Length: 138
Image (cartoon, rainbow, N blue to C red; front, side, top):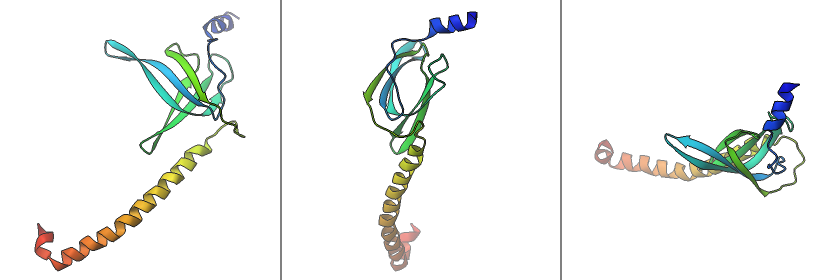
């Protein structure tokens, strides 16, 4: 029973209620060499796991320049200074892993548009190379 009493003493009580679909900003202390700073990670909560105990975690996802980045934060980690809930969203699933594929699909659509626009340019370059072979050789 000592282990459970010790775990209860380490639980944080200052955390807001975090649910899947919420947009959150997590502030975490990061040590870089001698200095320590607070890094922010803002994104959508995909999942909350392991209940309310000491092992409770949340998976947060954000997209940076078209690349999805996910981080799993243990909620009761001492380096987490605070968590702000920016927006609540009504969702009908406990785990929002399907968002990974949905975002990828949107990126693929954009890439198809870029490829279609680039295709005529490639053909034009090939035609110029045929007309002026000495320029293409350079």
